Amino acid sequence: MPQQADMFFDAHLDLAYLTEVGRDMHAPLDDCRGRLLPAAVTLPSLRDGNVHACLGTIFTEALATDATNTSTPTTDTPEAAYPEGDALAAWRAGMRQLKLYQAWAQAGVIELMPRRPQGTHANTDAPPARDDEAASVATPARDTDAPLLLGILMECADPIETPDQLDEWANAGVIAIGMAWWRGSRYAGGNGLGGPLTDAGRDLADRMDDLGIVHDLSHLSQHATDELLAHTDRVVVASHSNCRALLDGEANPDWQRHLSDETIAEIGRRGGIVGLNLVRNFIRSGLKRDDPDDRPTIDETLAHVEHVCDIMGHRRGVGLGTDMDGGITANDLPRGINSPSDLHKLCDALTTRGWSDAEVRGFAWGNWTRFWGVE
Image (cartoon, rainbow, N blue to C red; front, side, top):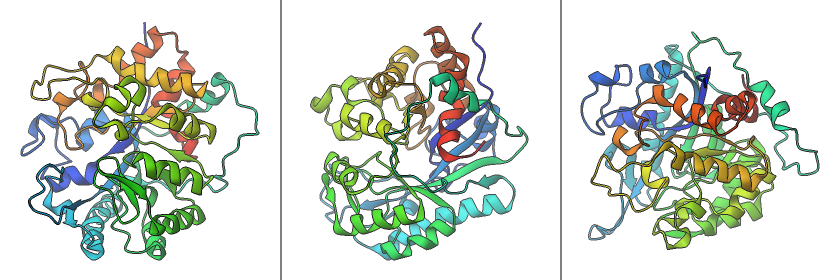
């Protein structure tokens, strides 16, 4: 019989955002009130689901300056929003979320993850390890009673007023940055409106490389993605993205939100990771968004995992980046997955597909922890 994974690493959870929408992150799921219900994620639910490490985001989003533009998505969290182009307001919005993670760390609720060890240039000359060798380090060694190990991922870089200010964010715990969200930022075009990497974005990329902060491609426009990959030779990740080829390609209105095969191959060539996003319309297109029962299957979900593996040529470049409750509810997850306690069903299904125990542990835990240099 398939075995439940010992531990999970989730590379994308909007924990500070959920606090800002009023969720008591210390409560059981059944006690959650307010928005984004039914809930999937609180700190106790992560513990119950054996999620012992994650990337927790600082999520902010610019509001359109044109109030008549109602077709443009904006966050439903005023505390996470700021007027477009207002760097100081963006800094304040991001700093509030950073302070929450720091308070949790001081209280012993989480343990902040250090930056990835330096030496992050792409290494395409070294012979690839076999999957069983690479995943052998994936056996969880972390104390199950330890605080949640959390790395801070900035999702939209506008809170960084200038590239020179990045040092302050890095010293405070930021270890990865995605330069844009849907609308984009002062640094890069986003997946909704498009646009290039700006001059400030190139300067920020250089400073990130100097400090060893990892680039996250999720939410970048294709234009910005291509320019960033041309600008830096460092390892990159997509913390919570799925495969464009399985989502109608460029016929999908949200095509830039999903990874092209070429981008997946480049992430793999550099030794990066793609985190599986569990948001249902990022798994199968054509869903009835107003029907909570129209949810993709686990097999449809894992098709994205195996497509990434086919493109990369190995199983070391995939992991989880669930985005649970990141502006959605438990009804927006695949059928049968309603909380972190159900993540083992993905591993069970991979086992039935012929993945070895070491490869399954790699997907659940070891690929990400090896990437970040933690156990």
